[in-house]
Amino acid sequence: MIRTLRGTVLELHAGFCILEVSGLGYEIRTTVSNLSHLSTILGQSILLYIHDHIREDSHDVYGFNQYSDLELFERLISVSGVGPKVALLIMSAGSASSVKKAILDGNLTFLTSISGVGKKTAQKIVLDLKGHLVEEEGFGENDTEVIEALVSLGYASDDARKAVQILSPEITEVSARIREALKKLSKKVK
Image (cartoon, rainbow, N blue to C red; front, side):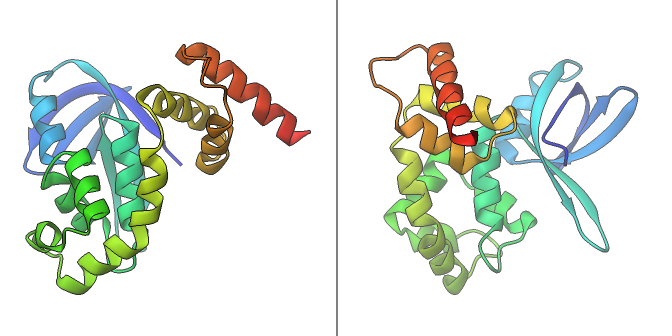
């Protein structure tokens, strides 16, 4: 599975960009806010976090500037009845934090105002994701970086979260928190 792509932003189109990686042009579907950011760096290199969505009749690639946006996208598509296109529309309705807040607050009005999201789907999203997002809210900015680093090293997201939760709050530097989390994860493996 592809998790990241680093390449040059060649073109921007409605709903997607073309990212050139080693001579290959990838069509990367993304949110409106990501497209806006990419427009400021057209022709420059960028790293995108990728969700590779393969089905019998299609192969779509979704990309995000931040790993936390990718996680939210993948949480949304885990909800029955929410496909990648609807998840992208939800994420385009506001910042990731405003979408999370709407879910945490049970704001069905916000969710149903998005094309393709009816009342039942909005209720499912709130019901299925509220607990997961509450857990994420307990992590600080540095903890999110530590979790992303551990996941990029191949650890499961749940294992990375558990390791970070038991770290001493006295360790504040990101690199030190990563080292300590790796020690805890290596003890678990043995």
